[in-house]
Length: 558
Image (cartoon, rainbow, N blue to C red; front, top):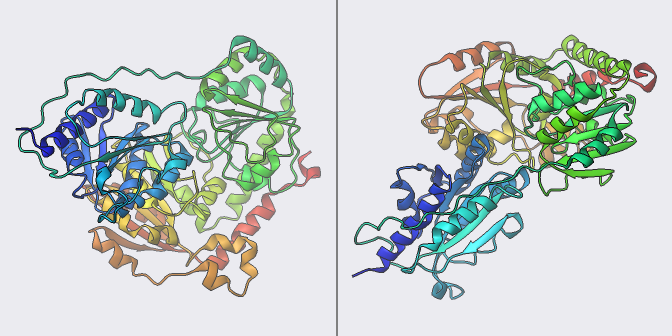
């Protein structure tokens, strides 16, 4: 006799097998009762690697990091009730950053909804604004062959036309365990082939004639881009490339002669505007760069999907196309470069910014240069928001070393950063891994340290005693500044690190490079936390000195 538990097991197995056959290889699961059929289907599947994480918030950010590193959707599973709500910050980041996640939310059946049943609320529309699609299944029933097709559709919806999270709400009636092993799926999901967008030949020609021969700049924004096509286009146009630290253009074996890595420093002045700015990818990290590009006579934005990344609402043209395909086509079509002195002027101020940063060296400049020097080829550098990503922007420079730079920049939050970092490390795609985060970012995700167990990685904890970024904002003058914005915390970082069996190493600024090299060279599976204290007031003064010395007036830059 087939029991409800047997139906549940067969139902969950058909769904999970469909997702696996559609290309999913990873699942992140938080333990719970109502989600038992889904968890068992994942744990027993030969082609899925599952990770169990107790805290749903940690699990969601961990899945986010995995999906970001691998570029593929990751299954996320939890039980019903408040467990689901703990995913919300990570789901919001996945939406903003266009990271594909498959959210499998176990639920109570319809007869237990809206009647005061324990651990039950309407979770079907919880993530609605952030989702690419939402599907609510009926309770398990004998006919299940269609679930493979649904799984293929869900994987497709998480990747195209706009990558992001998709939810499947799965109600189960009790009993939740089967009396006999579920039968294998009997149907194969459809093969899904996804397109890459580009423009037609006529449109490429019109665009090429419009931009060639002018004083323009390519702005490589805050998302991973293919360096070579953009470099070839810059060569054809004789334009510089302002490279955001998250663009992928600052590091690697490609030609970096045209890459500007100090634009946040020198564009704080009144450097000459461009005739045209051609931006690929998300809006840049740097506020100075964003304000400068708004002064250009014309702005063209290239979006790889249906998003409209134009916060200034001043783009003259919005192009929806794959950045690499568009850049390659334009490079082959452009016939007239800009005058030679246009690029030379940019290269001169780039050298000026680099010289100022070197002359006014500080713990911030030294530690980012030390990090880049110490990391091996094909390593991961994860950076937190607030001051850390901005210091990376100002002080990283460029290198022929292939490095992957990551940051949860979709919503620029300080939540879940350690969990995201460990998820990316767990992908196994990097030769080494370093996260540089501020003290509040570290403390905000102490539970994320649990996700680092069984991994090898280093965390550089840059401790300026609170929200140091607010030193640069108008709130700094308020009498309530310390209690309301700086919010320094009393925490025993060594004890917190030891809870999860990680190593703690207090570090002085002049010893950071050696401590990092030692941590990266240590064999075995371990996480080291290098705790570096930074004088907040001195740091603010040093930043202002570098910004003032790097900024060029209109007359100087002409």
